[in-house]
Image 1 (cartoon, rainbow, N blue to C red):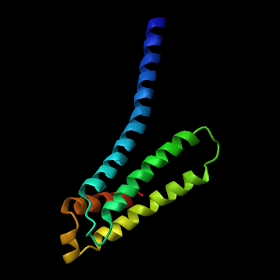
Image 2 (cartoon, rainbow, N blue to C red):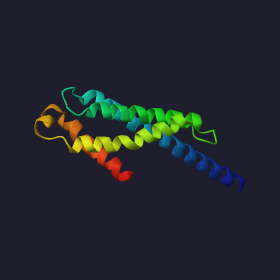
Image 3 (cartoon, helix red, strand yellow):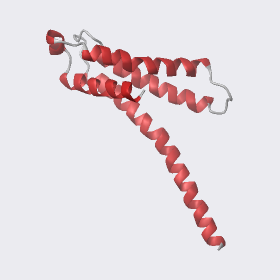
Image 4 (tube, helix red, strand yellow):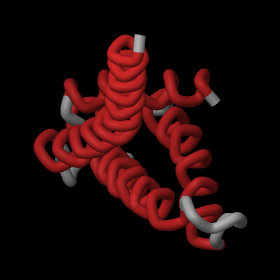
Length: 129
């Protein structure tokens, strides 16, 4: 009976560790992918700075994760943490506006892949908010 209880505790500990790892790894990989996407597919001729917006969102997401990890022991949120979260709430609205208002000649200068991913990303984040 004691071996079964120990095995149950081990399984619970592994499940908890896996959940924590996924809670950190998935957002970090997503934010890193956004930074890579903006750097790889950006074009400075695009009238709306879609690539810069994607890079900023990814970098601020990584910064917010770092601040969350350091602020986790504190009972109250720091001003930096609140500022980062506020900016991360506003950027999808800006991205949606910029992406949906690209027309004609402006679309020629923006990367097609980045434009489509931006439309999907920003509208999905606005809906999720």
